[in-house]
Length: 175
Image 1 (cartoon, rainbow, N blue to C red):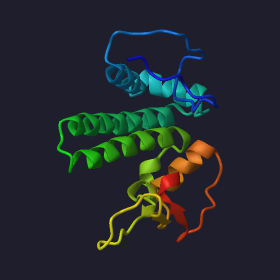
Image 2: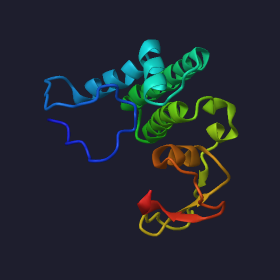
Image 3: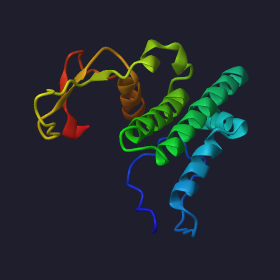
């Protein structure tokens, strides 16, 4: 089964190759994708991306960034692969932490030293479903709770400061 076509838009700066071709593989697409992601955790690749794509010039800063990215990617991979063998009540949480760590790796490139900031240790979102009602994603809302990874990822993706106020409600179906 071939992968879907890439969506149009600006590169996030994580891919080191300037052009893409129409290539196909007989390998498992998930293994190919995770292989590419693991490629980013290589010290030399991460330092090259940090310097050439994100303008981080200090050798020590690039080395620290590469180490942090490697840790985030290793954790993401371990959570993702553990979730594949998990049961339905635990697998979604492991997938969540896998993608949270991938988000942290991306944010590390854009904001080196992410782990030193408080937002790295908070989600930034909250949700309280009514325990007496069936959850309906069309009617549920998330609430912005302080500053967290949601804000950091939003700012990395949008390349602008997040101006969503604390306490704001966002429809789940949009997220």
